[in-house]
Length: 110
Image (cartoon, rainbow, N blue to C red; front, side, top):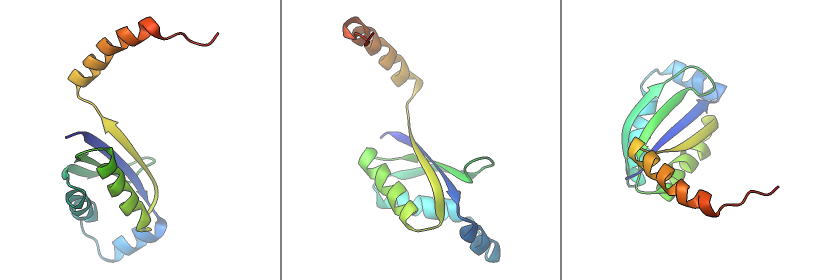
């Protein structure tokens, strides 16, 4: 199954609610959401920067991971999010090899 990285930032209201009853929401919510979409949670972390947490999910396809992102975003606790499809190094090398053939027929606008 494809791997995905989902990054999200909490709303101030969500942080306030979590401060009142601290617990590992990222792990609990992400595991449940991934399972409901037919995938599984590989890992979840809180982080600094533009996003407050990141998860790595193993999902059957883009549609399944989009369902996770949409459902989590629709819950109202997230102010921003980003989903990234992850490729293995072997997939990257295969893409580079395939790009050689594409480059032979691609003609950029000039």
